[in-house]
Length: 309
Image 1 (tube, one colour):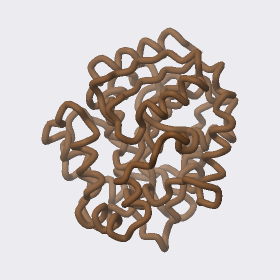
Image 2: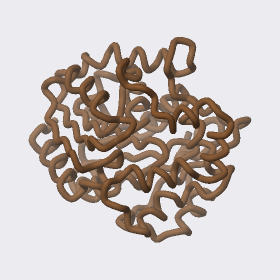
Image 3: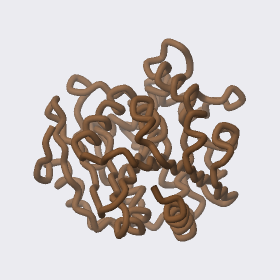
C-alpha cells in the first residue's frame, strides 16, 4: 500500500501517446494484492476526487484537471483494469463494485486528503464514489455529477439492448473483448460532436487486446438489476441514502443525448437533490465533458469557487 515508480502498464500505455491535453505524470499505488492502480495527483488545495466510468479512464477528466490544478488538488484514479492501471485476469482480481469501492478507500486513505472532499463522478464513477461515501459521508462536502447514477435503474427506464447483450450473453462478451465494440462504440456514440482522431486514439489506447478489455466487459456484467445481483445491496443503499446529500453544494452537468444515463436518471437526481445547480445540454451526449468542455469546465470552476469550503 505504498507509492511506487511508474508501473509497466503505465509505461506501456503512455508509450502510445502523446495524448492531447494530458501532460500529466501519473502516480502508482500498490494494493495489498500486489496490483498497481494508476492515479493523477495534480495541484494543491481542497481535494477534488474525479471518478471515471466504463469504458473511459482518467483521460476523460483532463480538461477539468487542467482548469483546476492551480488552486485545487485533483485526484483522478484509473480503476483496476482500466486506463493506466494493471489489467489482471479474473483469477487475480474480482471485478465487482464492492472491490472498486475498497480500492478507492485504500487509495484515498493513503493520500491523507482530510475531511473536505469534493466528489466529481461520471458513469460508473457515480456508484463507486457514492459507494465510498456510504462510509465517509461526513467527508464529502461538495458534489459534481455528470451523466451517472447513484441508485438502481429507474423503474420507467428499460436497460438498453446494447447493455443487455453485453451483460447476459456470450456474444456480447465476444463483441466487447474481441471486437472492442464497447470502447470503440463509446467514442462514436458517446458524443454529439465527433472526437478528433487523436482524442479517440487516447480513449482507446488502454484497451488494445482481448486481455486488456476484461474490465470493460466485467463492468457491464456487474450491472445490478435486482435483489441477488452482486452489487444490488450497495446500489440500493446508495439510492436510499442519496437524500442525505441534499444539503451539500451540488452541480449537475448533463448531456441529454445519452442512451443510457438519459432524462430518467436526471429526474431522480433533480428530485433527490433539489437545490443542485444544473447545466443541461440538449446537444451533448454521454461524454458530456467531451462535447461541452469549453463551456462546462468554466461552469464547474465557477461553482467550486463560489462554494468554498
